[in-house]
Length: 272
Image (cartoon, rainbow, N blue to C red; front, side):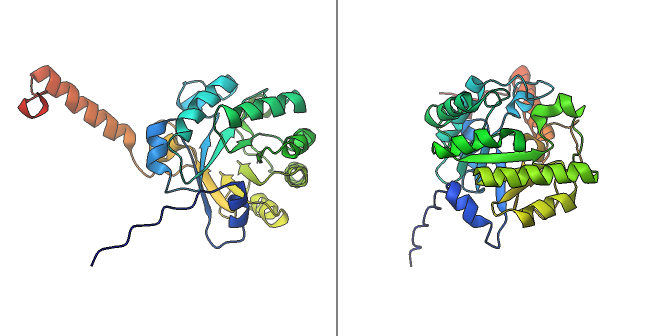
């Protein structure tokens, strides 16, 4: 008896992500920056994020501030060619939206039109709400990001957990509420105490996606290179390494080098 063909998973949209908050299953998000990797993870996750984290894990910088709009468009376009199921989100780089709604709409439009993204993510709370509201009015799905916002690394004095005292907690909560009112469809909560993330998740109607924000968020996101163990020296508390690709790559390349130098490769099997 033949097995019926599997039905391809449904393409997820911003509205699909909103609906997931009411479900029993958590939202799964991961970063991707190229076609090959995006193809591998597309059907396994709900959201693929082309993050400005590429400045660190792809370009080797110490923060995300030097990433340009052209950088994100390039990587997003490559990833988009592999995506048939997951919802594709692009980060808006530093200073592509903070200068006003006109710039934000224009730059987000390029990410959707040229980068083939399906939504954009930007950092900030109350300060960017008027900009977010106008973007949403122009039909651009916007994901928010509060707490530890990496583009504010210099203002924070480093990558430090935010919201530890009552005043800071209240400020972040108000940021989240303001973003919801401005029209974001989802929100990343980064680098904050578990109880603050829980309070935000319970207070707002849109899904929360945590990174270093505890168990109570509606979903979780990690940078792919981090969860795959590709950076041995990078081990923040919030990252769980599900593989040790650093050693796997070193072993494979080392074996290749040894076989080339010894004349073992290519052999007859790998020749024409």
